Amino acid sequence: MKIYREDLLSVTIIKSDCDKIIRTILSNRGKCSIGVIITVAMMLIIGGTFPNMALSNSSSQIPSGSREISGNSSSSGSAPNLNGIHDQSSSATPVSSSHAASSILGGNITGGVGSSNKVVMINFDDGYKSQLIYGKPILNKYGFKASFFIVCGKVATQPYWMNWQDIAELKKDGMDIESHTMTHAHLNKLSTNALTYEIGGSKQCLATHGINSTIFGYPFNVGSNMPSIVNTVAKYYNIGRSGTDPLMFLNCNGYAKDSQTDCGTYLANGKLTHANRYDIRSASFYHISNKHNFSPPEMFQVFLQIINSQIPSNSNGKINAIPIIVYHNLTTSIQDYTPVSHASSTTVDLFAQEMKYLHDNGFRVLLLNQLGYDANNNIFYIKKVPSSANGTATNVTTLIRGPSP
Ligand SMILES: [Zn+2]
Image 1: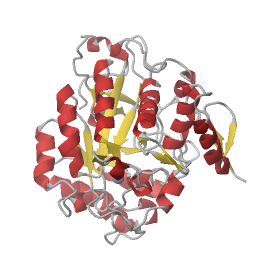
Image 2 (image 1 turned 120 degrees about the horizontal axis):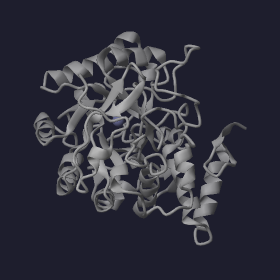
Image 3 (image 1 turned 90 degrees about the horizontal axis):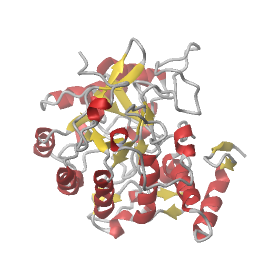
Image 4 (image 1 turned 60 degrees about the vertical axis):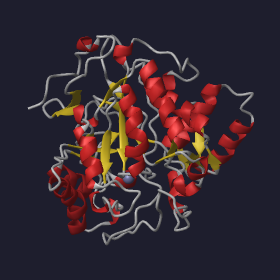
């Protein structure tokens, strides 16, 4: 039996037992502290526990009319179908039991420190039309901007994907448009030429539509642990985003998994580091773990846990940790949310609730392209910080600099 990881409760979790544990906890939720429930939920949602299950459940049996499409995620570069379940972590990237996350266990998840210390980045992957239809008006309501990762070869090929006019509208609105390959392939199964097509070709594809993409998002969060893929990403992009941690540490020093002291891409022994400029860590939202389907209210608790896990790391106006939340399809239908094949979907109401929480609690929403990388010191910095309602942004100086060259 394979030992999976240590969870945030500092006990050893056996992978095959995770399902039993969470079902037990959820069935006894009245007896459990919400912190325990949330912690285990977070572990499963953003950890490496359920993706294998979810991926294995991708099928062609998708209700007609669904915005999510499914199908076999082809291992070749020959026009694989997009899968309704995206950006799952490979089991190679289990969630980090960071000190930040563990230290708020059982804490007040609705509270927080001064708003100048609370930041978040909102990402949307895959180019779903629903992101424009439902997501953008909610973002606009609060003046939030988000980063959209587009699968260039899929644009406008189906009604549920955005078209170029849609993407231009987002760009005009100040949104960040970035690359998510040509076909949403599993990069770890591609030839060198296919990698160049997916990674370099998508940058060129966006460029032909007036978009200068400097950030690459790994489909399924796969490939950022493979030098051949990372080196290809490095040829075309400044930074890359993968999964699956609740926080991105700007010094890359907050991950218990690796004892990194900075964000250098490789260790002295030639191995890739856990977090680096081509492996920015994000939290993809999936609502299904082993046989448990998290309701929107449960997912809201996961959201709170993740975004507030930064609090111990960011104090006195110094930002060292940023939660990067990755959304996929948005739906108004709970029937469209629930299926296993739609594990990456978020209801519009839940998304609205989450954005309202960010607004009401003084979070500053940053774009992913505001992350700069200092190659001399191997750390990230925030290029610029929008003025906040509280007027305290100018105090945020550590790791924050002016616009990069
Ligand atoms: Zn994706």
